Each structure stands twice: as C-alpha cells, then as structure tokens.
Image (cartoon, rainbow, N blue to C red; front, top):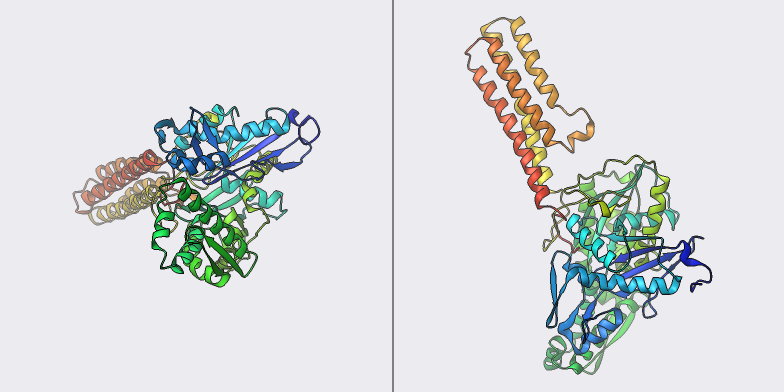
Length: 537
C-alpha cells in the first residue's frame, strides 16, 4: 500500500523536471490522480549537491546545510556542468554523471517510498536545445539512479502539453504556444507548434545569466545602497570566511528571496540585513524600477524568437508563463505590453513542466503514428535509449552570448550558398542560349536552352518548404549534374562564343556553391549539440 492509499505501484508514472536550481517530480497513478512529490516538505528539491564527510553525496536541504560549514564541497547547479566530465567537490573529484544521478536518486527513493514500488514509466525533461552528448549524460544518470530507460522530453513541449491538457486551452493543429520559462537561474523561451502528429518546438532560445536569483540581487543591491556606512559588514557578507558569516550570508539571500515574493502580493516589504543589523524597506515600485531592465532582456528575446519562428500572430494560441520567477507581476505586464497577448499565469508555475511531461505522452498517443518532419533540422542523431515523443531541435551550445534569437548559422549559410547555386545555373542557361542564338540558329538555341533548362529545373525546390530549409546534399548532386549538362550543351552548340565558356564557368560556380553549402551544414552539425545563442543548459 502506498501513501496514496491503494496499489499505486502497479501502474504509476513519474515525471521529472531536472532544473538548474530546483528539481520537481510529479507522480501519477493509473486512475489519473496526479500529485507532486515533497522533499523536505516542499515540492521543490534544491538541485545542489554537496560532498559528505564520507564518499556520499548530499542533496536538497541537506546539501545546503552542509554548504554553510563546507562551501568548497557544494555545487549548487549540477545541470550547468553537463558538458564537463568531472567536478571537484572539496578535495575529491566526482564524475558529473554521478552528481546528476545523486539528484535523480533522491527523486527515485522518494517516489518508491510514497508509491510503494518502482514506476511503470519515467519521463525526464530537458532543454529543447540539448544535443545527443548532453542527453546521453542525462540518460546515464537516470540509469544510475535506478530509473531504467527513461523517456526524454523537451521542457517547452511539456509546458505546452500542460497548457492544453491541464488548463484545457484549445490549440488547433497548425497553431502554437509560446513557453516563457523564467526559473531561479536561467531563462528559456520556445515556440511550440501543434502538428498532426504531436507537439514540436520550432524556435528556442535562452539566457544563462537571467533568473530569479538576479531579481533577488535587486533586493540585496537596494539594501546595500541604503547602508553606505556598513562597508566592513558587507565585505563579510560578500566574502564570508567563518561559519557565522556563511550563515549570515545565507540568511541575507533567503530574506531577499522572501522580500521578492512578498512584493508579488503586497506593496511593501522589509529586509533584515545580518551583520549590518538593520531593516531596509523596499516598495514594489522601487523593486520594479530596478528589475525592469533585467526583465526587458527576456521580453526582447521572446519577440526575437517569435520572429525567427516565422509563426503568424493569428496562429499563436497563447503565451504560457512557467518557472517560479514568473510570479513577479511585472513579468506578465511586460510580456503583455510587448506581445499584445495576455499571458497565462498559474498558481504554481514551478510544477507545469513536470506535470506536463506526463500529459505530453498522452497527447502523443492520441496523435497519428507517422512521425511529422520537425520544423528545425536536427544536427545530430538521437541515441536509441533517448526516444522522445517529440523531435527536439538541436543547435550549437548556448554559452555566454546574450544576443537576440537567431537561426543557426550553418543552415543559414547553406541556404544562401544553395540559392547562389540556383542563380548561377539560371545565368549559365541564359548565357549559353544567347551564345548559340548569335552563332547558329534560333532552333539550335531553343534546343540548347531546353537542355540547359533541365539542369536548372532540377535545382528548383519542388516543395514550398524547401525555400526555407534547403537540402545542400541533394543540391550539390543536382548542381554537378547541371555542370555536366552545360558541358554537353556546349559541345552540341559547336561554337566558341564568349558566352559558352562563361556558361561553363558560372555553372561550375553553381556546383562549388552547392558543395560549400553541404560542407557548411556538415560542419555545423559536427560543432552542434546545443544552441548558437546563449542560455544555460
């Protein structure tokens, strides 16, 4: 018998949102009842990990308490280390996959304790831009945590599924949901389209240096500015060297977070500053005035991502705010003003991704079995153990760049080069036909033009979407065929006019351009695995 009262273990499913700062898990039994797991009396499990006095790894509140006395052994965000092989915690080195597994193991043990047995299915979410290497680390960590072969799902897809299934919002086929995810440590935004075969991200972007912690810093900076005579105390708070100073620093930042949350409900709040031993009052107006420039970056990136997605405004079914930091009223206000679309805000935005992960699986079951072509071409193959109900876009790693949303550079260059190849083939055909017309007869010119036109036609996109997503591999082969046909046409013309060699040269340029397009895309894939623009994993 599980804690829910019944034979839960026979068919319950587990959805896990492994976040940068917090991890959330939702359990659903076979009768459809869904409940978040609690860790230290909270649905939010701190993702931080600390090395214990022995070889064990502490997680959640235990890790945070250990960090007070042993800060060098604490890693607050293992998710940020997914590209690394190892990490030093104190004087010991651990594999990153082992550190991630410690967090997932905590979830596994709690799920088994509550439900009375192992889950029948596990879904783990991940950023839409993660490539095969990062997904492999996550899958390996899940296995080490005793979760077996898990199903991986992009976070924005889970959010969109929650928007549709739990909130009951209508999203017709061909329409999209904007997932605006402002967590404690990072910001991510994605446009998710509903196709005939499920949900697919069509554009994603993010910022690594924007989250709720930055809004907490606004509160701390306000207190610092109002205590200019306490430089020594602030030095101890910024660079604690004793356990007492460590506890004071933690109390300060915990208080700042509480003030931020209180200002979401009230007009004023007071922050007690340890060591300075003073209370500082902060109004919502003051807080929003300082926070607005930070949040403006997320709103601007949302606008840029929508433009990059090429999704018409009338097909946007809604803007869904997820992540605990979206509770700040200013977030919804700024998004509304910028997009002229009223965003959807829920009471517990931290739970949307974990809960939606289980809904997304159901949505995919209802969809047609034939897979729909993804809107963004993957840059690396998915490993077999990483079957996801949705094909996630894979782009170059997002690291330390804060520009607006952009299309991946490799495919964009490939598109330009492919169009150069097409234009060159057209010029070649016209040049050769003009030469034959001048030297011989209109009939011969028509014959040669028809032969060369065949080379141009095979380069033309036969489907509208090819204009947006060219295939450099195919176009290279076709451009080579065009060059051969140009040479054959030149021999048939039996003329040495100026335009004949020009035709051959230009057509050769077409083949070279298509080859460069192919090589550019291949190089983009080789260097890919995440986003081109920034955002933390």
